[in-house]
Image 1 (cartoon, helix red, strand yellow):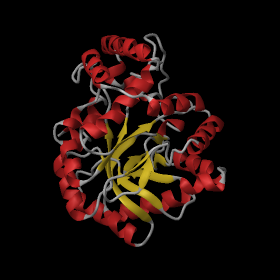
Image 2: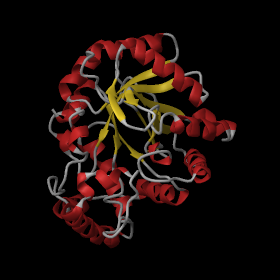
Image 3: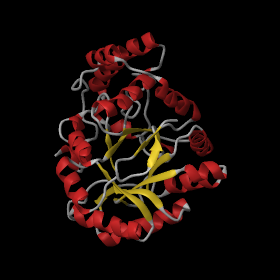
Image 4: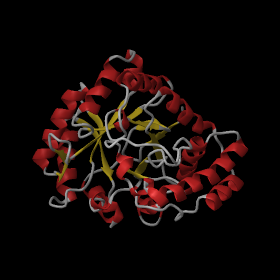
Length: 338
């Protein structure tokens, strides 16, 4: 597994990271045993970056990741770097209640995460969405205090726009920005990527398969459970889905011509964008099974030349997808979209 520095202020991490959210929440039921086996398989393959959030199933995901680390071989456990998001407020019914970026809340969230994960420090800590009532300088400043005390190693950001990135970076060193980026989610290319490049901040890209939409495995007639995020996502609804899956079929022709899968092609495309934007981009793979993990890891061996990239661009133009990446109410929380 190749590695790269997570920005000028961050640690060295694997070229691909493992996003663990789906092992606990938002994509229907998951198998705990298989989830833990998948984390172990990722570590064995050289994946070092594990991403979670304290609000994923109200702490369940952190406890699952903590169990996976405790039961992994010592050498693999020690190589793991934990990226944790905080700040989202939930109620006992699972409803969302906003975000809390107050300094006292930041330290409270961190204390609980350390306990659930069973570790003495968090490698990269970030608020999931900007709290509109708290200046980003205060939130980042609180994380910086945790860094000074050794509870956190590095500071990250999540789903923020160029202006907020600059304000945060003026407060404390920022390792990376976690944000959605894929063939069908390219809004960061105009202002956000140039800003991260200028400031030496890496990008950890989630949603590289657009929640399975461009994985090549999502069928038109697939039934989604009520607790599956995609059941309410605009890109997966009615005519939107039909249109978007037509894009996937166009991408499939390119993938088959190279003897690889659609998912591997989509992930390889994201990997290729780092050098093109002169910045570090680390895709976060949301694999929930060892089978899907193995497929995703295969993307690191896929080389896309100029002809391939041009063909992909023609098959899936930047503005081709139909439907927002989140429902309207959630889009309102994205500083990156302002």
